[in-house]
Length: 210
Ligand code: B1M
Image (cartoon, rainbow, N blue to C red; front, side):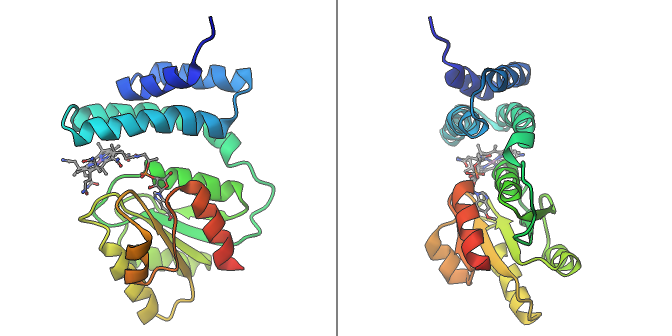
C-alpha cells in the first residue's frame, strides 16, 4: 500500500495537528519530496479547504488559528530549502501586510520565494503603516515595495501608500497581492504589478527591475 503523503499533510493542516504536520514534512524531505511540491500539493491544498470551511461557517477563527499554526510550523521546515540562494544581486524588496491586516501566510511565502530568486528581502511583518514602509524603503534603498492584503476592508490602504510614495518622489516599483486583489484593482490604484501567487510575484518582480 502506498502512502499519500500529500493528503496526509493537507489533513494535518485542516485538523490543525501541528506535530503531525511537522513530522510528515520532515519525513517527506527525508524521502526526497520537492519542497515546492510539499508546499503546493500538501500545505496549500489543506489551507484551501480551511478557507472554504471558514467561508461557509463550518469552522471559526480558533480552528483557523490552529490550522495556521500547523501550516507555519511545516513551512518553517521548508524555508531553508525554498529560500536558498547564492546571490542577492537583484536588489532589495521591502514587503509587509498593510495596516489593519494580520494575515501573513501568503506574504511569508512570497518573501521566501523572492529570497530564493536573488532578492534581498526586508520583511516588515503585519499591520504596516505608510510611514514604516517609507522609512524602510529609504533605509534599505529598496527597488521594489511589496504589499499584501487579505481583507476587502484593508486593500484600500494600498492606494494610501502608493499615493504617498508619489508625493515623496520615491522611485520604488510597487507589487501587490492577496486574495481580494486583482489586476483591475492594481491598475486602479497605480500599482506597477499584481501577482496572484508567489511564482508570479517572482516573475513580475524580475520584470519590474529590468
Ligand atoms: Co482571515 N479572512 N480573518 N484569518 N482568513 C480570510 C482572508 C477570509 C477570505 C475568510 C473567509 O471569510 N472566506 C475573510 C476575508 C473576507 C473579506 O475581506 N471579504 C477573513 C476574515 C473575515 C478574517 C477576520 C475579520 C475574522 C474575524 O476576526 N471575524 C480576521 C481579520 C484579522 C485582521 O487581519 N485584522 C481574520 C483572521 C484570520 C486568522 C488570524 C484566524 C488567520 C490568519 C493567520 C495568519 O495569517 N497568520 C486567517 C486565515 C488563515 C484566513 C484564510 C482562511 C486563509 C488565508 C491564507 O493564509 N491563505 C482566508 C481565506 C482565504 O483566503 N480563502 C481568510 C493561504 C495563503 C498561502 O494564501 O494569503 O491568499 P494567500 O496568499 C497567496 C496569494 O494571495 C498571493 O501569493 C500567496 C501564495 O500563493 N499573495 C501575494 C499574497 N500576498 C501577496 C503579495 C504579493 C504577491 C502575491 O506581492 C507583494
